[in-house]
Length: 62
Ligand code: SF4
Ligand code: SF4
Image (spheres, helix red, strand yellow):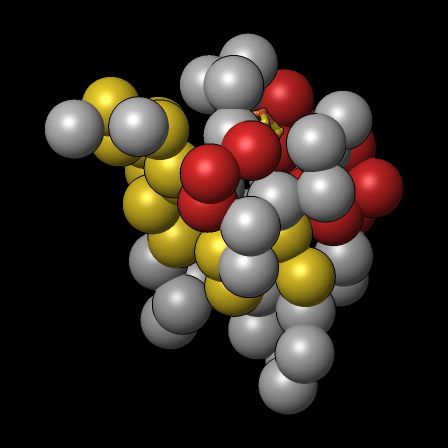
């Protein structure tokens, strides 16, 4: 199972990762990005690459 690891201290809630994700894994419900659909993550890395703050630090594949 894959999921992006989000450093919430660095997240500014811009939503770019939400738009970048082809699987609708991420949402910004309260000004900070959250994983809402973990089962759908395909570990493509798009969210990590597009985040302007470097707040997505890795794609965990545990
Ligand atoms: S790695 Fe890909 S599928 Fe997984 S949350 Fe990021 S953009 Fe979405
Ligand atoms: S792209 Fe980065 S800064 Fe913007 S909402 Fe997503 S994790 Fe937060």
